[in-house]
Image (cartoon, rainbow, N blue to C red; front, side):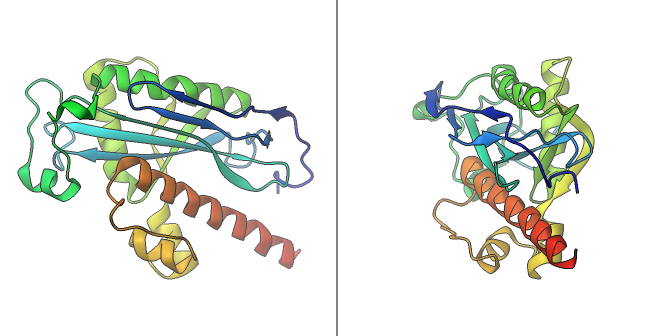
Length: 233
């Protein structure tokens, strides 16, 4: 496998940056380029909270992105986190049942939400940087039932007329499928618990919390696969 016998080539410093409710965390670990591990794609976990199920009509309200990379032990781990609240686009429909489920008040003044285009551009800049340092060609969206997230992401990209998305337009990695394979569970909370991860129902359905847990689960499954391969070698 490409991730064996790899040599550290880059070290990223530790810092925290806050931009309109955006949290960026760069871990102090050597980074090993991922270009051959996923056929040139960089896994980026995306979780989106919305005001309904229709990506063309319902508002995108919150988005989080978590970047994962290889450390010096060739283990996949979380290196960067980003999140922001988003102002509903003009004439967006807000489904009351969806808002009750995720607990978001779209017009609460303390949300510190930003325009949809600004949110996407803010997210895409560090993702592009991570693609470059890993010698990858594009990012691939990782999500739990990611058809929902990529549909809303693509609709927002189209609405805001962003020309160059860093993401593959339709390919994804699904941790619901991977969870069913590795842990016999498909619901995120149940997969996480089966994998020995901590889970807090009070924090669930926050975009950042769900994205972080999905990223942790994805790393755990990929790393577990590597160790199983090593046993079979």
